[in-house]
Length: 130
Picture 1 (spheres, rainbow, N blue to C red):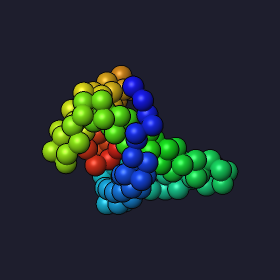
Picture 2: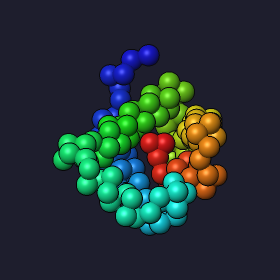
Picture 3: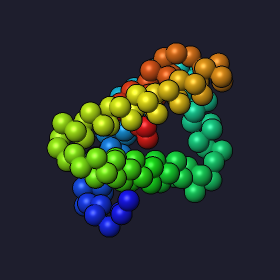
Picture 4: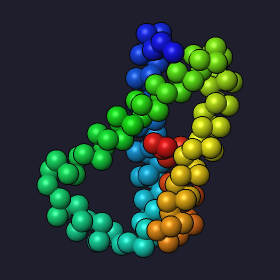
């Protein structure tokens, strides 16, 4: 499979859009997300205050790089299948989310004894890196 045909502009736009959507999504669900984590706002603030400047920003960089990788892989899947349409992109993304992201997050949270609501919030199609 050749990756020379990847549409880098589309990949970057998709990554930026996903990154921004994720920020809005988790901002809107910050209280239920913290409750599902079993943490208070004060605990989260104390954890952030204990981190260095680099450690505070690293998750945002990792998420953006992950969004680029996700968009690149989905572009590669669609290129490989020769199915470039909005419909094909949505269906392929849904299958990848259901088959890989949701199942991985649910499994990980189950073994860590996390609350079901955390899986619901963290695995919704709009939340992720994936």
